[in-house]
Amino acid sequence: MDLKVKAGGEAQSADELFDVVDEQDRVVGRARRAEVHARRLRHRAVHVLCFDEAGRVFLQRRSMAKDSAPGKWCASCSGHLDAGEDYAAAALRELAEEIGARVEPAALEPWLRLEACRETGMEFVWVYRVRHAGPFTLHPAEIMDGAWFERGALETALRERPRDFAGAFRYLWARLSW
Image (cartoon, rainbow, N blue to C red; front, side, top):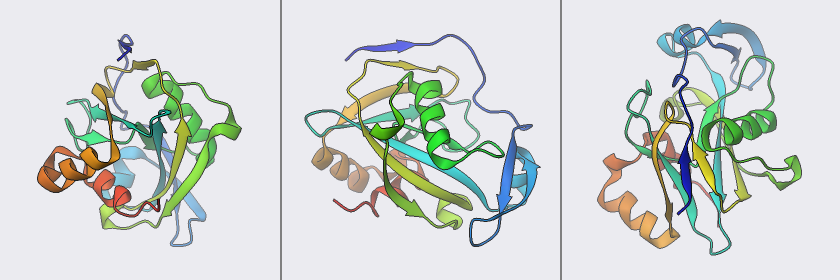
C-alpha cells in the first residue's frame, strides 16, 4: 500500500471553536472544544469512509496523541465541524487534512446521519462514503497507521476484538445500510 506520513502539526486544540446545537441540530451558540467536551454539549462531526474498487474500506488507527480513542481503529477520516462550517465542507476538509485525499464535492455521498447521543459523544454525525483508492498521506499528529479491510474481515474483527476500534466507529458501522 502506498502511504506517506506528513510532517508535524497537532492532534487537536482545546481552543477550537465549535457550534453548540440543540436537540434538533440547530445552532444555539459557540464554545471552545474543551468546554463542549467537558460539559457534554451537543455539537457536530463527520466520518468519511473511503472504499476502493474492490469494495475494501480504508481505516485509520488514531494517533496516541488524540484526546479520545487513542490507538483505536476508526473511519478513514473523522472530525468536528468548525464553527459556521457545514457537514460536507468539514468532510472534504478532514479528507484533505488527515489523509491527503482531495475529492470533488460531488464524489462525496451522504450515507448515514446519527443523532447526538452518549455513543457519539453528544455529536450529530453525518457519515459519508467516497470511492478513493489512495495514495494517502497520513497526518502523524492525527493518525499512527492505516490499512484496507474487506467487509467480512472487518466485521469479524469488530466481533472478536471490539476494543481495537473506537466506540463511535463501532456504533456507526453497526448502523450502516448495505
